[in-house]
Structure formats: structure tokens, C-alpha cells
Picture 1 (cartoon, rainbow, N blue to C red):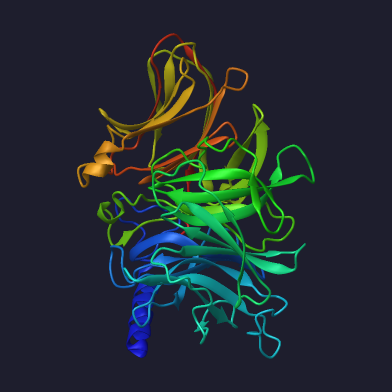
Picture 2: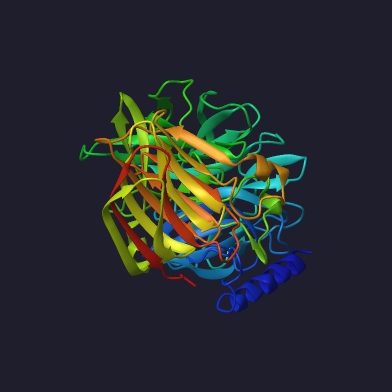
Length: 496
């Protein structure tokens, strides 16, 4: 059975390789976001940097375009922009699916898996037996992640629970041990463990329920980030995923306990749109690199039904992370990695114009990046409509009276494939202007929209499924006269 499953996974990997150059042109296919050549994907896993290469493992079904047969697929990049598919890394086997987790480079061979001077990469993941058990397993690679060997004494941590998953691992230098963050999904808390060798784990502490507890908690990510404008100062960001959305907490981690420094009952999100989930940050980036995360662009409420084929699911643009205090509370800042600028091609610039009602720009595209600075008139609603054709469009707007930034897909493209998708049309969050100005950084990639506002203070991500001719771009304003101070738009190259 083991040989058969591995052989089938390899065959599907080979098919994916063959399709890379000929596909990536289907309707709705993102061209500069990562997506598998064929079949289903969900959570990013094992994000790790090693010898100049960024590794992306992710949840994948080698056998179909819906959730199932969870396996770790693998891709690599030199710049977080262009990606190369590699063979299946860790396959489902003997009724144990390979659920989410992380990967580390065990440079000091604490695990003992290294041989003949070869440094092991170690994956720590949840082994899932459907409706029976979730426990933590490890596997190792001695060839930079190409082939993997499962530890013959798995599981390394088993509490006999049906829901106990998604390990995030990192090296804690002050304590000289590995730290694992694990999720108790139903009970809504994160549990921390330590280990000297990645095989034997000791309980450290729990982070109790806080913020949003309306859905099961999944995919913890604890990452140290810089404080904006304060060189040398750092904070820890703990992210969790729940019920089709995410939240974060900012505070301190002393190697044993995470302490949240924001209000316990306040809910703050890394993304206020409907389609950003399970984000984790890269392990072991060089000191000069900014902390960087990637999330899954979909939503469990309709993920299996989105109208894409032969693939389903994609990854967000990589986001640099930092924090700063605004109104005496820590705010997570996220910005797209600068390397994406290498994809810019033809450029348009517009400046110093008045927006009365609507203004159609002389550009048509479903594959672009746009930076725009607007001075909204008081009491107006203004912004940008993309994927526009007639009365069909996706709206990115700002309500000046209520100080709300929103996205609205209720008039955009195909929506009837799933009732939950139809209901989830408008998403909003509060956002104060800076010097009466609104700054938006928009990426539109055929079926994906990512909006970064005010230098990453707020992000909203959404999927849409427009017609191929829905490619107009329009500025709008509901009352008074808003000012377009400056806008620059670039068409973007494909990464495939």
C-alpha cells in the first residue's frame, strides 16, 4: 500500500510538472500568485529558508480538485516571486493524512537525523486519522527537502485527542531549545511545548481563550517582528485562524509564556476580507530579511465549490510583517514584498484630478498593481471599481462619515455557485485617514484582489470570478468632490 500511494503521488506530481508551461492561462487562474498546476490546495506549511532558497510546502490533494487525501506538496523560490514545483514531499500513508505543520533546518543536528555531514531539514506536522485522532509526527530530509523519511517512532506527541493540531516550530536561542505552538481547536487555546531534540516534548504553558472564539481555532503562528520606527525593538505576534477568518495578538514571549499586550476582548485581524486563512511566517530567514508570511486564499464556507479548474486554491502574495502603536494599541503592519516590483511592465500615472461621480480610466486589465492616493470629501463614499463591465464590478470604497474601508463583491461576476459565497459580499473595517488622505495599494490577479491600506495598517483580500471582458477600472465618489492626488498603475507579468 505504501509503494502504491507513493507511486500514485509521484505520477500526479509528474503530471503537474507537465502542465506548468501549458496551463496557467485558464479563466480565473492567478498569474502572479502561487497556485498548484492541478488539484486542490489549502494551508501553507513548512515555510523555511535554506541556502538561498525559500521553501513552500502546502496542503494538497494529489488525486482531486476538492479537499481530501491531505499530503504535503512542495515548491521553491529564489525571490518569493517565481516558483518551481517539486515532487510530492510527504504523502498520506496507512490511513494517516499529513495535516498542517512547519519545517526547520536543524543546523546543529539536535535531532540526530544528520548523516555524513548532511544537515537535516525536519518537518513537524499533524498526523490525522479521520474522526479518530490527531497527533504530532516528524519527518526528515537530507537532500534539501526533495525526499523525506518519516520518523520510525512517530507520533512524537499524542494526547489521545481527536482535535489537537497544526504545530508551529522555531528555535528559541535564549533557552537553547525548540518551541512548539499547538492548537486545541475546540477549547480555543494555544499550548506551548519545548524540546532539545525535536523528538521529546515538554509542556511549557497555555495561552487562554481571547478575542474571537466563535469558531474552532487552528494554525497558530508565533513570530518575532520589528517595531516600526524603533530600530532594535521587537515584539511577538501570535496569529490564529478560526471560522474562515484570522486574528492576531501582540506582546512578549519569554521562552515559556506568551503575554498579550492588547485588550483581551478586542478582535483585530491580519486581514478583514473573506479569503485569507492559515497564514504562517517563514522560519530561519537571514537577519537582514524582514519577517515574511504567506496565507491561503480561500474560505472553508465555500472552498470546495469555487468555480476553478483544474486547480482549486492559491497562496497570498508574501507579506513583510512589523508592528507599531496606534492609539496606544499594537497594530500589525503588512506590506507586499518589494521583489514583486520586478513583475511591473507598462505603467500609467494619473494625478491632481477631481472625482465628481465616476471617472473611467483608460486602462483595461485583470492583471495589475495599483497605488492610489485619494483625499475623500467629507461625508462621501469614494474609491475604485475594478473588474468593471456595465453594472458588474468589484468595489473598494471608503465611507468618510463612518471612517470605514470596505470591499464589496455583490455586483461582481459569478456568485451563485454557493449560497455562503453569495451571502458573504461586503467586508469592512474602521480606518482613520492620514492628513485627510487615503492610501491604497491594490493587486488584482484575475480572481484574487488584495488591498493594502495606509501602508499596511489594514488589509482586505477577496476572491471574485468575473467574466473575461470585465476588465474596466473606474474611480467613483458619491457626493461632493474627492481629489485624486496621484495614482500609478502597472500591468504585471506572469510568473509561470
